[in-house]
Image (cartoon, rainbow, N blue to C red; front, side, top):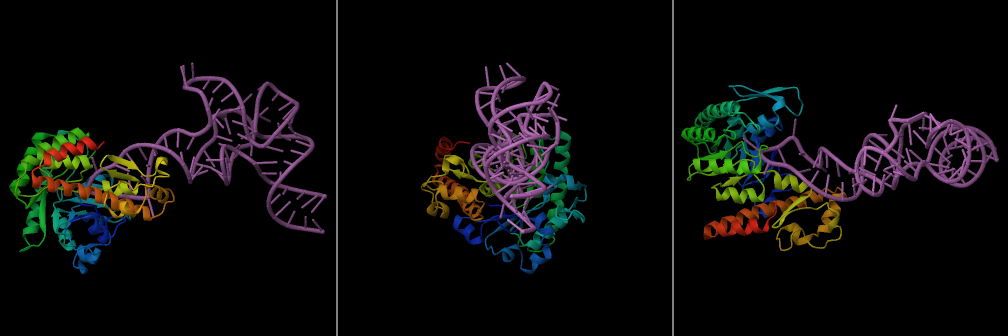
Length: 340
RNA sequence: GGUGGGGUUCCCGAGCGGCCAAAGGGAACAGACUGUAAAUCUGUCGGCGAAGCCUUCGGAGGUUCGAAUCCUCCCCCCACCA
């Protein structure tokens, strides 16, 4: 899922998202609640009408902002009290119920439970408390969701538990017991070593039902995706392809390249020869490097198109390999080419 | 012709006797980025392997223990007045 926090995947239009193969994108409850506010979006029938995107949208609950904007927030049983990072002044309270109501107002196809994501490293006590709170909030989220008869929006639960395997087991058991149409592994890619992230994902994913989608939140690099798919992950979201594109880092089968580097000054080749994205079909590395250095706005669009195409094409190929029963070989080939 | 201001490391620009290889921007070069407060952030940026040494602040002399900073002459630039 390309990340479109503020009702836009930065730098690209919905038409370009379609062209690049996006099937679903992610929006953010916290940001859209603050601006423009749910009521505005509701008048358009939800995010789809507001942002002109007809395909599915998953909304994050705001749980991650509790974590990343922690200095502006205070957490309690009731919910998450925070100061707006926009105007600082007004205080807001995001409860599990409010998180669901806002997401219903946004009319997202997949809503996420409000959870508490904790920083790395966290001690066992903190991880245990966050896990417990996440479970209690999950029940409240589900109650709010079920109070709406035939609610068209799905709701996914989120597993926490820090980097403690037994806590992950407990969290998974509790969240599965509450019961959701899909499950997410939260609390990863928060600063832990890559090996640990993979280990925790590999430990947690098998704890979740195989007949429901399994979503690893906030991950990851191309290699992370391939490896976690091998562990059973079905869905991901990550800012990496879009943010890194804007910062000049482009993905190829052989690894990344930084388009601002002097070595590309005169290169007539596209970012990745053979790539079928709009950018690679029409523009050279030298031109993109020039746009980047000249700080021309077009470069963000062109690099974002390429990176999203790369990511989405990668998972498309993985999907085909799985259907053909050749994924293990695909994965080996991928790793033999791709340098981290 | 007169008066005043000024020439600083690739560019702009601070410094105005020692704490200055010289603030701060920019450019350049490299790196980072994993549920987006990100078109952001970090590092390097005279030479020599480091402690340290060497060359540098328009040019040439001079004063001083010590000068980008003070003095003399010269060369440029800008403003105003004739």
